[in-house]
Image (cartoon, rainbow, N blue to C red; front, side):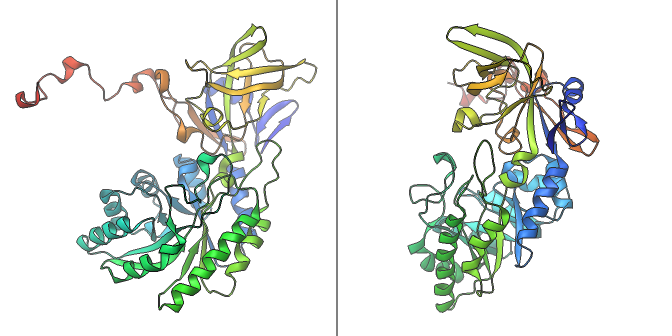
Length: 426
């Protein structure tokens, strides 16, 4: 959905040059058509199976993105009460939501029970015990799936790999049977399935097959012990192309992941995030100035690590394209850097780009996943605007923060005088 037309980069039928000029930069831009198309492609690969698609809200939680997916029929995977609140605000029912995450608080559990979430993906014996108490107090029954840690390495950067025994996530395979039996004895709980999530940016579909084989064996063992197992949640992590990767197609994923579960008569769930929105978004930025300082040439832009932290945090590659393509310009090697006062503030290093001049615009590609959601106000920088494009129309779906927004809710020391009791003062 991001293509050049008459040498101008378009998002669907909207010229990004016009959008950058009118809305300003930095700005995230998402293609609604691309999001819907990715969901259709994934759904088509799963059409022969009873598989539900739960979008991982953490990937991009803008209300307009969530609304686009909700109207297209997606269900959702959340990891916090804040994400649940976003969905409830949109009118999404709790029965379309599964609640994952290693550190759910008692208050979050209570809120999710009140909303009627379809399932809690639980990650430890302590969490099982707490959820039982909260559910009993609320006179509710929590349907749960135990998250399995299969000790399988997968995904990209080590910070986004979650399926090995050295990570905080999930329950070792050897403990699943005992904890499932323990949960079945507790009041307020209804153990009905297994969950597994290996990490993100997985490029080898055979990884899913190996894990599905483990989960299938656990299903059989649990049923042999008299337990009910109705669902198997394979998580997400399906990779996308950022540079020269060769990610599996939805059909390749489905063939690898679902075959080991055939014949078990379980409902399969998956939790894609990056696949649905990653390449459906870009970050628009403006060149502030050029700095030629031997041996480096720096292209200083107005987007920074506080806007898109992935290059600094994960050493991630994002393609960078000029909004106006000028193929006659010289190709040069530059570092694309932002204004933040950190040497780690870069969007690209030693990147070959056609020469860009001050006040020209560029698009940082594949920024729809883990972009704005991981942004911050570091260096007291207002966060970017967000725009959703649909066909030849676009809307600002999050206003750019103002400088005043940065300290809204803060007060000077004099402003808190008298709030502390005398006993609290030294």
